[in-house]
Length: 227
Ligand SMILES: Cc1cc2nc3c(=O)[nH]c(=O)nc-3n(C[C@H](O)[C@H](O)[C@H](O)COP(=O)(O)OP(=O)(O)OC[C@H]3O[C@@H](n4cnc5c(N)ncnc54)[C@H](O)[C@@H]3O)c2cc1C
Image (tube, rainbow, N blue to C red; front, side, top):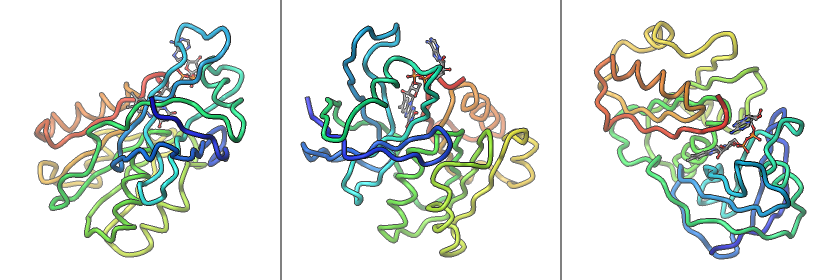
């Protein structure tokens, strides 16, 4: 199995940490894909020693970065063990995988992130921006407070031109049909990328189905454990 070596850990917003790994086995990935990390530890709880994480870094950044919420008191034994890794420690991982990737730049892309669901979207946005791809996109970014992860980086992309617009939805404002209708007049001419807590993503997916968006134009990454 491939190995990753921990380089450093950084708090990117309150209780949200990025773990930077040296890609010692030169894994190749596409922006938006995920890997599974294995962190063996003593007395694992019922959720075990492995978890899926979207890779929050873009391929041009070379390092493999995963970003996750760690609220130490309520954390799983996995998150505690991940948090206790030291610089230089190596862990095993799977090959990168996943279909939450960009294939069509001809339509406007609507990214919807619920909290930590921003991770694959950060990778995709930085990748498209770095590679000077011509794209039209919006990000609808919902979070429990205004301390959102990767704010500065994504706002730099927004401020670089008029092809990308961010809409924040901070609790108690949330993404619902009424809010979507304030932004969009038509729906079936766009492609949707939804990532975040399962309940939230399923609810928004349902709205788009109701609006007549076909299934192949909605890509989803459901994050379990955050509902
Ligand atoms: C394709 C994919 C990509 C993903 N990408 C990311 C990512 O980029 N970042 C990320 O953070 N996560 C991501 N996830 C989700 C990730 O795999 C974990 O499920 C998530 O981080 C929750 O971790 P945890 O189970 O260790 O719970 P913790 O985060 O430690 O706990 C969260 C809270 O949930 C409660 N809880 C949840 N489930 C249970 C349970 N079964 N028993 C008891 N308490 C429970 C805990 O008490 C705690 O309050 C992804 C999942 C998939 C499938």
